[in-house]
Length: 477
Image 1 (spheres, rainbow, N blue to C red):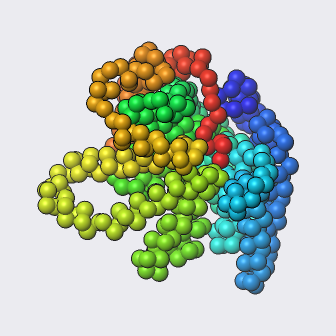
Image 2: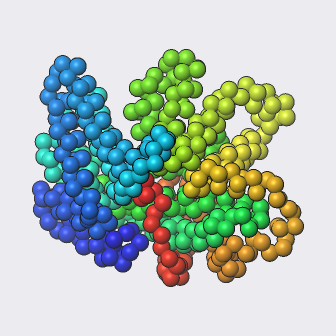
Image 3: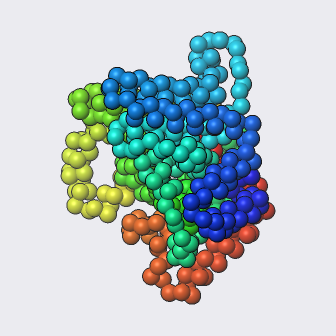
């Protein structure tokens, strides 16, 4: 059962309806049952691992809180972290490290769905208790719900224990306004996934699967398509998850903030996968010393954080390079700040704020799009070959010889994709200008126009249901 399956469309209304009908004191039990049912439908073979991880982190958090001696607190903190990270290493990185060591042995273990997300979410419980931001949860079943909460377990957002756990104790009543806002978020999330991602997936698979025989223009289109695909796929899931939680009266972190409008790579990472970037900031970058130990140490810390972030995404050297590039961009960007300021002043760009922003946003978009090549490619050699072909075989003729229509979609689906992407861009521009979520941009629009937009999105979704729905990209991490 995935978020785009018929079974889920039946499961969710039943789950939410029963949630509001039963007494508030036992709602957490119902949500826990629903969460484990949902996880078992995805990956029942590894539900025991989820249970073991839940029990161990619950016990570790309790022991960290119980003892006052700092050495004992640190001991149980380290034990809780190491045990959970070991699960990740065993199931996700064992073959990667064996390959790096030169061993010919491969275990080929199946990766449990959502393990990177629920492991990091569990660790926030121990960290928050250690930092004095949270008291231990006495009820292990409520804690188990925090770890396994079905809207989040597949692909996040990675919630903090101090933020989500208290909300699971609230007695929320059904609220029509809140439900309406949640449904709007879910509608746009499904629009991004079903309408845009399904078509971008066809395009990128078609081009990258035979990249040696594709023109540089086709490869550039595929890179752009994947840049859109991964954003719509992950943001689409996040909007669906946030919308589901909002209907139930639970507020979770907004995971994206129009990242492709960022004016620098560091700004991009303040807008992209916010729950993960802030996790690494609070639980790795700052403990490493952050920017408190001089510039050299700061730059090293940035590179460490982004290399680890790359590894978090996948056990492949391509993800390490992707993370390293994002860290390197930020280090170089900070080192070149005086030069950039002098150049913008010399060219009088600083006196034209609109032009300045467009230039910085365009450069950032190009840099980020380049890193997605390594994120998408199965090997470093393939990524390098794609980059080489883009720059070595470029021909302006391919811009006008029909190449842009011969990328696996066909003219009708290509035009449909363009229309959908225009809607996405308009929505993101309005959200950026109004500093709001997508569910808020239609509030001051006249009712007939507002409902016309809703119906348009629904119709576009229905017209796209015949396309093959792939798993959410981040569910593989």
